[in-house]
Amino acid sequence: MCIPKCMFSAETSNNNWGFLDKPVYTVEDLMEITKSSRTTIWRIQKLGFLRKLPGKTSVHVPRMEVVRYLESASGS
Image (cartoon, rainbow, N blue to C red; front, side):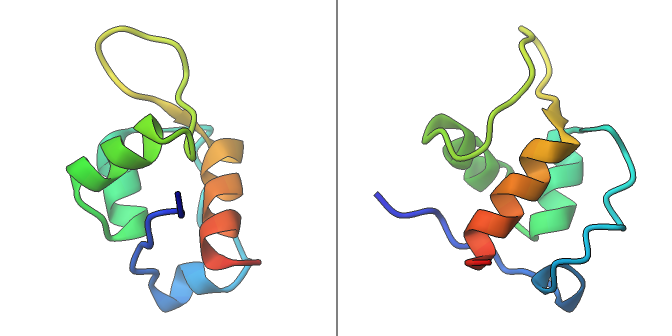
């Protein structure tokens, strides 16, 4: 199964992840970063491409996971 493609802005297409300044990101943050819908973020997580922190109610993704996913999805 392939990694779902996200529409990356010019800011995310290079490997300068300096704009990712928070230690933990919510689904809303990920939607803004990847320009994807909530459903796409959910599918990416369910497929195992983006791991979240353990928790029952809300989804929180550590910065290193976001960087790892962006690098793998952009082909770098």
